[in-house]
Length: 51
Picture 1 (spheres, helix red, strand yellow):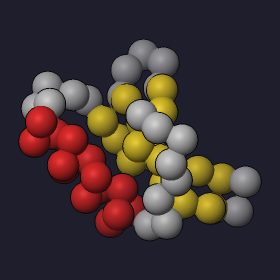
Picture 2: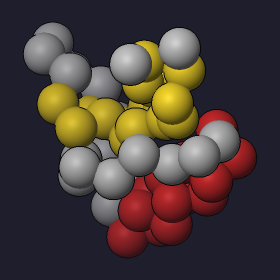
Picture 3: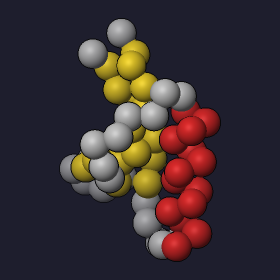
Picture 4: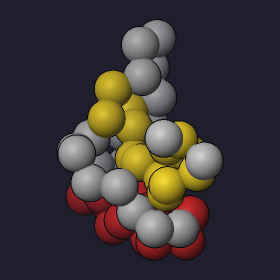
């Protein structure tokens, strides 16, 4: 069951950026864009979270 989306650092071992789970992909992408404005070299992805 999909419960939302989490923002992760896309590297060899994916790590969450925070413990927050966003209700939909659009909300996650919005936060991702805000972070990329401050840190353009960051490699971030929105990943689905399942229960």
